[in-house]
Every structure is written in C-alpha cells, then in structure tokens.
Amino acid sequence: MTQPQTQAVRPKVTYTKGDLVLFRDVEKFWLGKPGHTFVGRVERTWRHADTGKVLYDLVELSGNRHHAGIDPDYMRLLPPADAMHDIDTAPLTEPDTGAMTPAAVAWLCQHLGQDSSALPARH
Image (cartoon, rainbow, N blue to C red):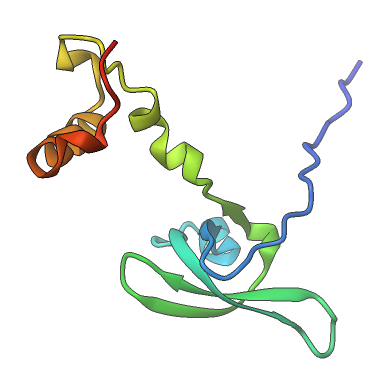
C-alpha cells in the first residue's frame, strides 16, 4: 500500500516595499548552479500586463544587484522577529555569557559601550 503524498499549503503572502525576503531562482536551483538563493529587499510590486500575476522587483543585499519580475511563489518573508530572536531571548540575568549566542553578546557589548541606559534593568 502506498502512502498518499501531502504538500504543505502555504498561505498567500503580500510583500511590501522594504520587506526582506529569501528568494530562490528555481531554474538555477534545479540545474545545480551556484547563487540560486539570496536575501533581497522588495523594491517594487507590479502586475504583469499579459498574465495579471503580481510580480516583484528585488535588490539582492549581498551585491546590491537588481532582479526584476520575481515570482512570489519562490520568495519567503524574513520576519524581524526571527532575525532578532537571539537578542530578544538573551539570558540577561545569566552571569555566563557563554549561554548567549555570539550575535547577542556582540549586540550587548556594542550597546554597553554606547549607552547602558538602553538596556533593560536587571531584576
């Protein structure tokens, strides 16, 4: 007996200018070519005149390259909460900085050097 295949149903997402997204160039991906996935910033949204499909123009953050006519089926939103999770959950009451991720330690060191009033009070 074969098991039925299931596919995750992804809700439709509308991206707005300034959103950070992960994009995968599907042709490069399936052909095994390098550089198929990158982080980009949404610059413009537009509707294709012939198909009516909503497309996006992105700027690739690592090289400041522009990519036009991106299909949103191959984009995923990079939420700020995910990028800031390590800092938001940093154990500020722990005396051992080894319990923190390097990003959290770097952020804390940077802000302690500038303005310690920006940090939450210890309880």
